[in-house]
Length: 535
Image (cartoon, rainbow, N blue to C red; front, side):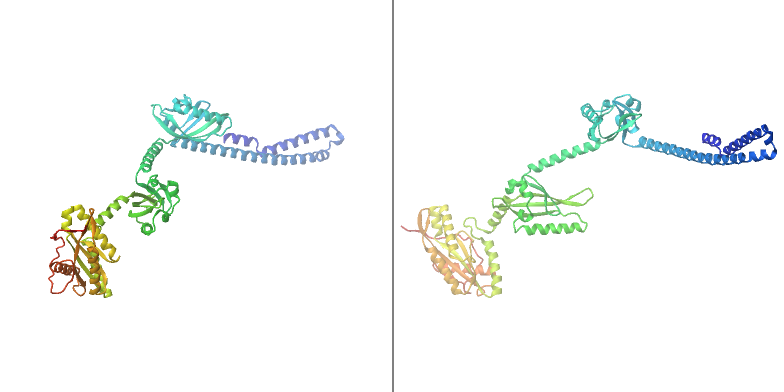
């Protein structure tokens, strides 16, 4: 500012005025001398008249010089003010950049050729070297040996005008020998009249280690998923598969690419589809209320490529992202075909006789209860026949238990072929059977059926290579004429069967109130005479 004051004082506009006056006086003096040199022109009036134009010219020149120097001074002042403001802005910018460089967590560096010429504190922290040590080293000395060749090639490509990646990841070799991963961004610049490289380095070691752990974990889980016997799958909330493990091909015959294109209607059988879709819809509704995705578990049937089907137990849970939002579902499908078959087999065994595959006593009583309920609504009769084989024990004793079992299976087959599909034939004891007629029209019709049964069983059987004859004794009771409850009705039929045996066997007896109704003895051993074998 002091320099600017001296400069402006030197060019003060009033200096122009003074200069103009001096010029005017000088010109007046010259004119006066001329007039005095010529006496005829030296009168005072002539001198004054001769000097006046020159004086006016001097004043005009002074005014012009004043205006010129005033404008010049103003321009100089503006130029100096602008230069001063620019120097202040530059100083502020340099201070701001210095503050940023010294406080940022990113390492900043400038490299010229092979030398490091500028670093910030973060770069010294990252490398473990102090600033003088870094400036005394080439940049390759702080780079891991395995990375140096690639970095030199990038630098050469950049100097030749090529466009190598300006951002990359590499490893720094610290002073203490440790290795740190950094993400580097570089660009060319001019520094002190020469080409240099400006770069930033961010320490990403923790991120790399986390990504490596995540990659290993993902590989491990994918390995487990790809080799698990269960089918592991993911699906978006729109019902589209996003991943399926290869084990699906073993389960259903379709490969992964084929299943990825299938809809739920193709993945499930028509009977299982409504179960899954309704459960999925309920789960989505629960999420819409802000509640977590409920775990779903169901047994469903899935079609296979060869036309068969498999039963699977499906467990479904929600996939939650980092924001806590459900973005899809994770499912595990386990083949339970054998388990379900075993369960059905056990269920069948609980309701059917193992030897003859006829309904057992439990299933008989269940069907009898249903038949009585239907008969009450429709006002029709229900008949129960209690049937005991005559001369079965001698066959069993003469030809062995295998022959006895063969005879029982043959009896069961004849009874099934004789009766209607809605009728039930049950084995309730060793050689005792019960026939249920759920829609008997009358006692006479029931007796007619019983006589057909007796006649059919009187035909000879071939057992263990022998033709044998047996007979049957049948007791008959009807709802509602004889009893209204299942247990009472079966006891009446049992009592009628015992009355038939007492009357000589091989006959049909209808229960009457005169007959006793004892507790049924369905496993009473037979005391028949020897079998009759046909020649």
